[in-house]
Length: 360
Image 1 (tube, rainbow, N blue to C red):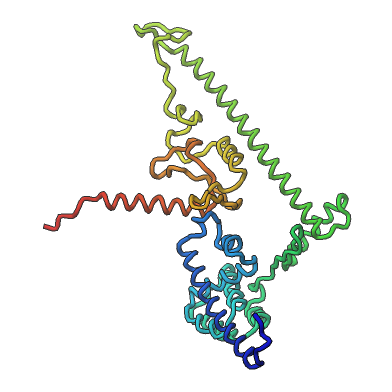
Image 2 (cartoon, rainbow, N blue to C red; image 1 turned 90 degrees about the vertical axis):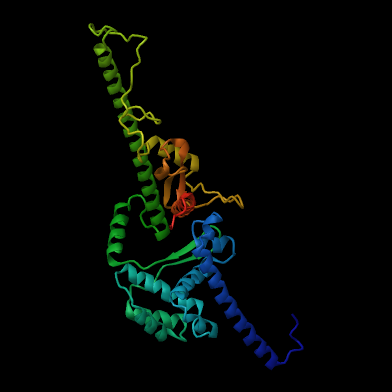
């Protein structure tokens, strides 16, 4: 756009008009984000969170997505703020800061009434982000988020957080304990070493669980063999008068119901929520520790590796078994999404199947 022919007044007027339209567009975006969250459309598209959807589909930066989602949630709770957002008295930064403050206060067991929230918004009306931080810090110093992540390069990220005195004392003890291995570590080196130690311990625990499970299986196999030998000695001939040390080929030896099931798990009820450890390991290996939900529309697989859960393809409540073929790994978001869809359809079918009520 060529501004050379524009007068100074025209430039100033045009800038104000564009900013006003930008504010209205921002408010509209927040309403769309609210509807995306209400309908869980981000989950249907294969994303574990609305934030991930905003970053990867809407191309917002991590910080920009975070601000808009926080502002959207506060606006949904207090619709009267929309007018002030459109006028510029409030902005995304101040709204997101207040929303995060309220969430942190709630974690600290402090609940704000609607009237108190209105007074809080009046106090920050027309204030900058820095002034808002000062006001909120004066109210509750530890409720203002002090953690920051900033991407420096594709390989490096700056992380900032506030540590309590107790945490610093624990870190000093660990530094002293590891001083023979890393004498004067930077915080990055120190935390990397702690992460390596935690991962090694986690793998060791998994290995011990596998070995323990293997030992348990061997013991159960030995007990089953002993029970089989005892059963052979107690089997009577067809006349019921003599005992034999060998099984009669014409007789069938029944396994007790508690020992006979689709998973060949001894003493496991036929219909149980219990999932065998070897099945859980198989699911983790097959899924590579990642949610297996795939969006049928785009073919995109969810990338979440957090809050993973074992889900029944055919719900347990509807008669689904615990056989490995009926199990899969999903994140919490997609487990809840599929459950709501399945049971909504089931409820609809039941409702439609009800005979009409005779009002006579």
